[in-house]
Image (tube, rainbow, N blue to C red; front, side, top):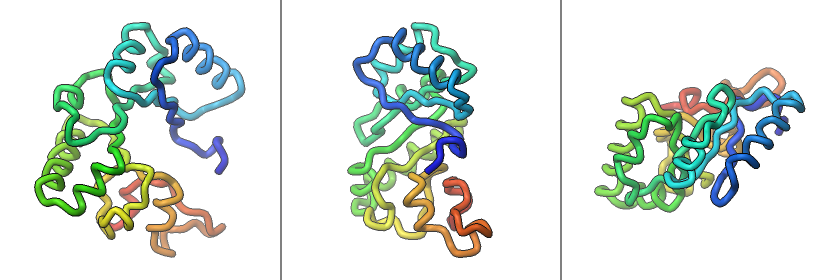
Length: 168
């Protein structure tokens, strides 16, 4: 996969200093990177980044590993632009009605407040969600596998991995 075609680059953050992340962003931009960088992590790490004065023009924050234990107050934090759901949570939602309702509720809230939603790095078909594209984005390999032949470009490459290109 070529980075030049990416709409955004996800960087998982945990125990890294904000100055080190700012240097990484500067190096990425100096190398000609055009994708939006999304720092993904749990709320405490993202809060540290938010108060450090990250470059909002090139960097966004993504709440990562969202699951049944994620507080709704974390989802509505106004510094977020995206959320990524955990694989085990999505897989459980496919098997359990109550967990499925919780996932649908979280997805609905995220959409209503303008957040982008990302599916987990697991195959949605194996998670028991065939034909159900509840997320705005899926990992490129899985989105390509789920597309119909008419959703591919003339060169045979898949179209952008937005769930909106998938059947709902």
